[in-house]
Length: 144
Image (cartoon, rainbow, N blue to C red; front, side, top):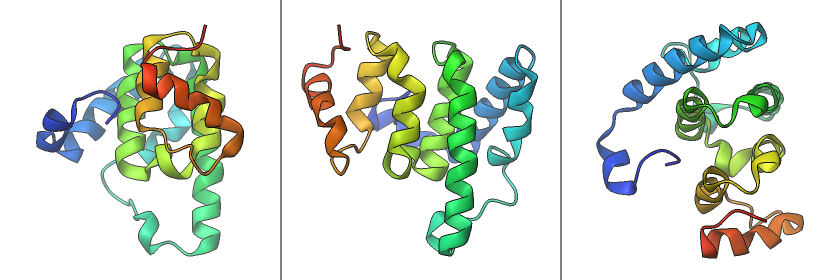
């Protein structure tokens, strides 16, 4: 979990996280209208798990999630964005499947505690070029 410690995260329902993310998206979309197009990824109905997608479906999902993450980038420091990140992590496991896009979104904030927190859950081990971020994970301090 990006927002919650492990004990709390287990007790919070996915529907609660999605509801908070939709509220956060509405807040951000009031400032950046382009974000409204991504609401479908946070709505409770119509979601298909990655586990049941074929390769083409997953490829299309990854393109959409990359676009969503790039649109969220300028808003990363806003609390409303944090709720969206939590939902994307829970629903789509972006911290595991979309590592490059997540890092592209948050790298401008490399010196913040939020960046360091995200590094704790990001699965960048398969991406050798990002291995230097292991230091951030160990120290829990952003890059200076």
